[in-house]
Length: 216
Image (cartoon, rainbow, N blue to C red; front, side):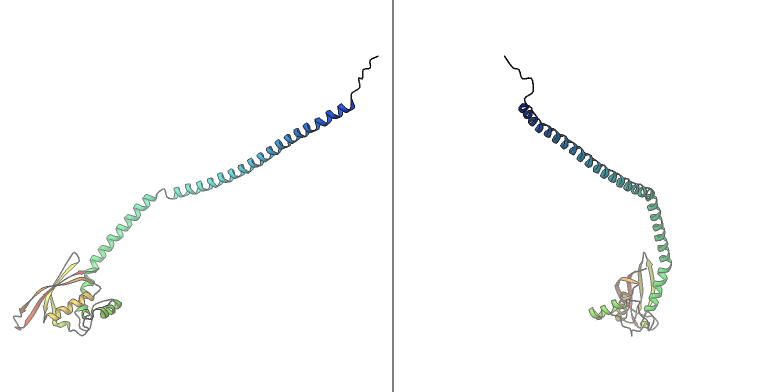
């Protein structure tokens, strides 16, 4: 008689269960790794979105500042033109004032130069430096300006030409030194002179001419 065993073999069932456990663990590991990756991706995406939002906000703030500056400087060329017009007007006024007061101040300075006991208006430090460097060019405070007198004074384009008579050449040299030391004259030059005889006193005099730039 043949016997047929219809009940499952316990050993085979156990082997099938053992072989199924690693497969399930591997599947769970894959699912866990996938979930972890998704979580990390979501975290990174959230971080990047926050950074992007901050960058956009900063760009918006900067753009607002740029727009404000553009509005403030929109009429910049107009302002520059007005400033130039004001500067040109001020310069023209200064030239007019100089033209009115300059010759007067120059003549007053010349009067001081030719007044006994007076002298040129000069910078004290410059005078002291001149005394150290070239004492021969320092004017003589004891000179008597009555030894010399002017006969002509002509000014054109801020260049003046002086003419006159002096007792001798040293008096002319003293006038030249005083004009050079003055703050009102520059580029003082002694022009060729001649000796003449006064018709009344019959005294020999020196006729001279000087040129200089006036500063005002």
